[in-house]
Image 1 (cartoon, helix red, strand yellow):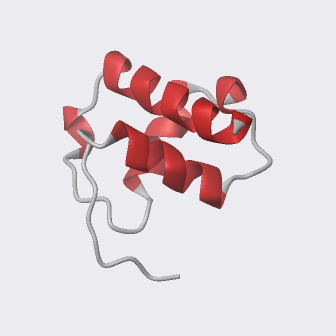
Image 2: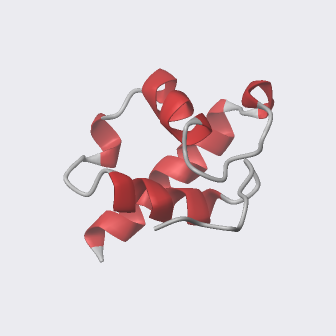
Image 3: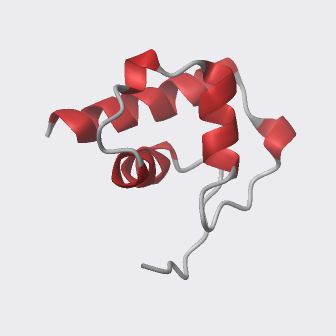
Length: 71
């Protein structure tokens, strides 16, 4: 399913949702931040600067992904 919309680091909930779609059987809490960073930058539609992330942003993405996986 191709997406027309783009995402950036400022969209943790949408990123979390897309990660849940792409990796439905992965426990978000088991993913290292280095891997999470790579997976986010490789998502279709991601246009953010890879250097603009922070631990806080990655944590917010991880928690949004966890919320999706628990629903």
